Length: 242
Image (cartoon, rainbow, N blue to C red; front, side, top):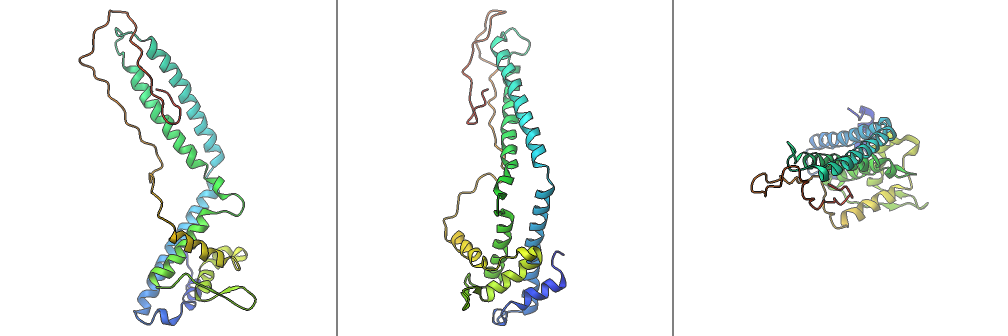
């Protein structure tokens, strides 16, 4: 459990009794704590993984893999041009180039993923934003609360949601717990929910390629020892020629 008994009591104490009146309070409390424990646990795992993962080392490795792939592809393109039809396997360069193109695309996808630390510059932290979003989702979906707050005479945000959100994240962030910034967090979530749903991309982040299988029958015969006709090479959107 990522939520201690004391943390759980502090969270439940911020939930207004009127939000529990229509249902089984004990069951709803268990549901809220289970959801929050999963959300907070996910934040801890992702944040720890980000801090421990050797991004710089892996970026260097995958850049080297991509560079070597391009060098080998260059040689294979040269071999393709020079391979005669009389060769025992005239299609070998083409098949190898297809594999190299797939490796290149996968390397590019991995390098894109390894650029994640750029999203954590300055005070930005996507994992923290996801944590806030999850806590606010529990508030609206399980407790039927609203994304709203008020301000006291000093202009500081207050209200049940402010107290609930603060109680959820305070043991995690301690001195870095947002105070006046809670209003901004709620406003960002309002704006996010009111915005059009973006089109979802690939959940794996890996580019897929469709390999063309050459037709081995029905081709015209060439004189022994003659060079193969040069077919027009394909260039992927990333500039990798095959």
